[in-house]
Amino acid sequence: MAATDGALGEALAQPFVKKHFTPAAKEATEKYVAEIGRAFGAELEKLAWMDKATKEKAREKLAKMAYLIGYPSKWRTYDFTVDAKSWAKTALAARAFQFKDDLRAGRQARGSRRWGRRPPP
Image: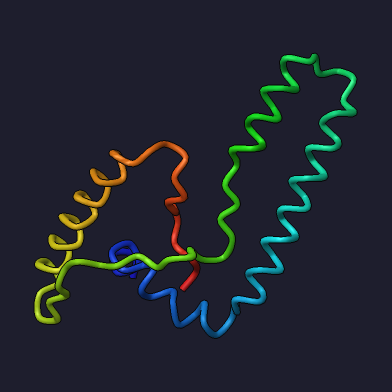
């Protein structure tokens, strides 16, 4: 199960997400988390123990935070074939796909919204 989830996690998660985490729920959660971020920023200004330079760094870090809620806005597209008769062929194809995808992601600008985890299946 772990190998299948690792190879096809977002594809497996889509039916679960469709049933249990609607777009409206995602939007509400994103608004809620954004409000928490704004409140954190407001409280940051009140901290007496933090000097001006440290507060500025904290504000910069807060501005760069990615709030990846529930599931990605664009689902991952898997570009390999599942061989129902050979687990080994499928596992190797999945690893090759993941390796190429990791290389491609490495060329992307830092701060991209790439998900490091899969939504729960």
